[in-house]
Length: 396
Image 1 (cartoon, helix red, strand yellow):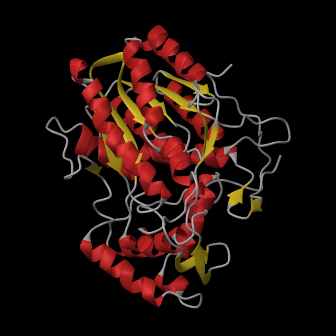
Image 2 (spheres, rainbow, N blue to C red; image 1 turned 45 degrees about the vertical axis):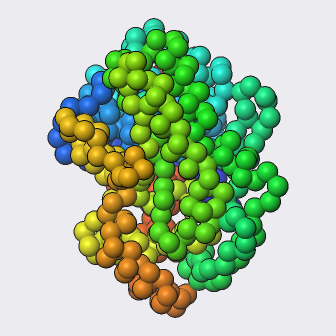
Image 3 (spheres, rainbow, N blue to C red; image 1 turned 135 degrees about the vertical axis):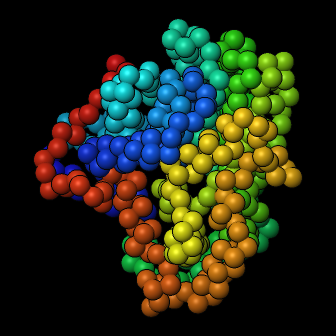
């Protein structure tokens, strides 16, 4: 079939398998171009199919020749119906990994469930014995708690008052004012339950009790802080409470891993275009101005550049892992530089519908958004007929 992007609001309903394959190949080539990393050799990536999780898996495999197991929850394609982008990404990753002689297997299912944890641990024990790096990169808005059966939904809302500021519709380029009502009732608790550290801790406890963690194993979860501009709705809002919980959980996991000399870290990453961030008011405008500023300064990075730098310059240097005063790895250091943030703040005050294409990088934002779904890659013929039914080799 010929697959074109079909939009509904801030969601693309289709994905392109050839474009997804090009995305994976581009990331692999970047990682290989940067040279070998003396990193972990047996890696579990929880949330492995898109964004930072996919780039982590690629960096592990093609930077350190690691065996990888990826866990994700993606929609398989069927005749006449394209799969989800993460499905196609994972199919392409396995194909390239196997071509390079690397072990790579995947599990498709709800990573929050006890069943998927058990299935993953059984696979580790059978094929790898133990893992020495566990990446936790889940980004689901909904979690059914495995013990209670209760389904919790996260919300992105300010706490204590209405938040009003500029935003942009990245499809049209229209800059407007938006107001977001504050959270209520159990919004904070639900958001923390979905996006906090409980599930990460449950994974690590299950892995340790099964004897599936190697001596000195590292685990890393991903977080975001962001600028003062977005603070009321993000870091000081409901999501921020969840991130606080995630970061506190790292210390609890490290304590639990002391007997095997293991450690847990949270890496604070850069703002990038994701399906989730595209739906968050204010964030698309901020990212558009940030992209323009960082590209002009020669500091712009996508997910794979961030993850390669995280591995090569933070996790596996041979020395102590550098952290901030709260114990977090800061790979958002370039985004949060004073000169970058000052320039973005200046542009924010100026931003209008009429001048955004000039002072911001709305085109770069749009391209990154379509790239998420396998569209707008150079070298891909989007008018060509493609086979939408692409298997992931290790998933039967």
